Amino acid sequence: MKNFYNLLIFSFIALNIQAQAIYKTIDSYKLEGERELKIQLPRNYDPEDKRTYPLIIVLDGDYLFEPVAGNIDYQAYWEDIPDCIVVGIKQGNTREDDFFYDDESFFPAHDGAAFYEFMAAELLPFIEDNYKASDFRIIVGHDLGANFINYYLFKDVPLFRSYIALSPDLAPEMMNRLKQRLSVLNRETFYYMATADADVKSLRTSIIKNDSIIKTIDNDKLFYKFDDFEDANHYSLVGRGIPKALNEIFAFYKPINGKEYTEQLLTSESTPYDYLIKKYEDIEYFYGFEKKLIENDIRAIAAACKSKDDLESLEKLSKLVKKEFPESMLSAYYLGMYHEKEGNIKKALQRYKSGLLLEPSQFIDKEVLLEKIYDMQEEMDN
Image 1 (spheres, rainbow, N blue to C red):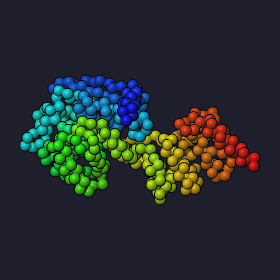
Image 2: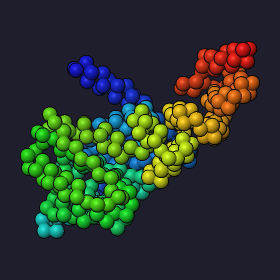
Image 3: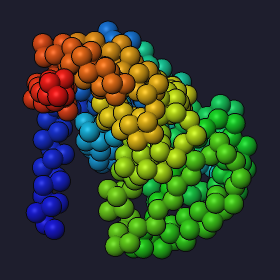
Image 4: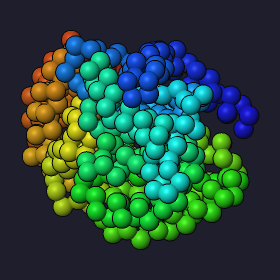
């Protein structure tokens, strides 16, 4: 087990070699001074590209930025989640002032109000002016910061679409206010909250109660997930909660896995091709950006076409692949598969041969094409 954790730590270090943090300083009128930021941009980030990326704001960036940024970089590398821009706000010397709320209204006051306004009026515009950030925003907080992120829900138009509250130190009245606000959300919003068996007792008690309240909310626009970790404390739960939260937030984005293939794709009343199109349309609707077609999903849809004997879907899929990957062996392989399935062996052979001079993909290379070519030639000779 120790070797496993060492390997996991090494993996994060190795991946972050290519995803180093950028340190920036923003001059804030609201905070009457400068504030330091840590920023991680996606790999191969191109400021000239039209593509935009989800924005993740991390409070307590002094210690919370690295575990968030590391998880983002790792999961995005394997295409489980999209590439994201991660921004951590350093608050080591100011956190109690930044998260201050009034003793009577229990809303941000004094320095807390200034920090609240800093986020909307200065930080977000600064990031959007300088980086390719999309409108899909996530905010992450721990204890006092996890309470503070809720205040952004109470704006007429909430600033964020996803909230990750790790062991929140909830202000009085926050439970009731959260229930009221989450009940009337009119846009899809993700809310994640976590505690642990060895969390601070007073926090754990209020978090468990808050969870029981949120679970009673009937609002199909709210996507809520709660975790109560075993063998974790107030600090170690952070390392377990972050990847779980990201998995929930980007559940619609994930590649088609075995469970989705068996329980949803094969049982869907839609054709496999229509299932694929809707999946990618839903991703664009939920997250506000277009996902590039990936080979994993192509393979899954092709397998479903074969399983359902849906030649029309396979033809549409092959044309889509040719459009999206004209220089890749993928285009030749799936066009060949379609012609093979329809019984036109001569045309399938031509398609497979045409791919030999194209670029290999993750799963399709010359050996795969040559094997198909030999199969077609053997079938024509028989």
